[in-house]
Image 1 (spheres, rainbow, N blue to C red):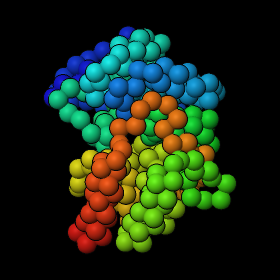
Image 2 (image 1 turned 60 degrees about the horizontal axis):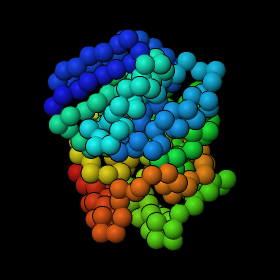
Image 3 (image 1 turned 60 degrees about the vertical axis):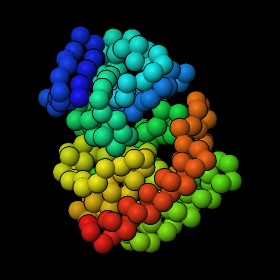
Amino acid sequence: MEYVYRSGKSFYSGSQPRFSASVKDVSVIIPTYNEEGVIGRLVEALSSALKGYDFEIVIVDDNSRDKTPEIADRLASSGKVAVLHRRGVKGIFSALQDGIKVAKGRVVVIMDADFSHPPGTVPRLVEGVKDHDIVIGSRFVKGADFSAPFERKYGPMILNAVCRLVLGLKSSDIFTGFHAMKREKFMQLKFRYPSVWGEFDMELLFRAQKAGFRMKDMPFSYNFRSEGKSKSSGFKVVRYGFAYLVRAFQLRFFG
């Protein structure tokens, strides 16, 4: 495994991501794989939305095969963007964990790179952390909007309801992957299971609820992969749905 970190004049490479001693208000963590068409515009949109905050955007790239690594390095020269290149390791949850390790923000935001999580909602999530430990972007509370093809809307709604019931989770949306959290609180959680896709969200919220964290749902408008190409379709969706159910029962009966 190799990690290469760049931000402004900062650079290092090694076998482990390094914890940061610096402090900012907010770090937005964005895992990427082949996002050359959107990453520049996403950084621009987030930078505009977060004016007034001392923020950074942490791109965690899993050895993309397109021009995402080069674009991320160019963006990192501004000092507002950090990029962590990971080679020999893959997976969205480990990418998020590594991104949070190197993050400087007291508050960390996790989100997708495809504009399904709107950049304009990020400040509202961040403000919510003033009174809570985790603020969860939800597609299923009053004021939210969930725009997606029929099977990609109602399938997740049913799966979400079943897994919430199995786990006894209070949050209305346990697969959203769009949260703002106090970094110190996240670092207190100990995770047991590897994640192929979005199962990490269930474990995150399950362990946070068990730890007594103060959590709040916040509505947002979700647009199904409005940019780029989806990496999950057809049989993969069914396989991932099954993985979610397995993880829910693992957490419920084995902790």
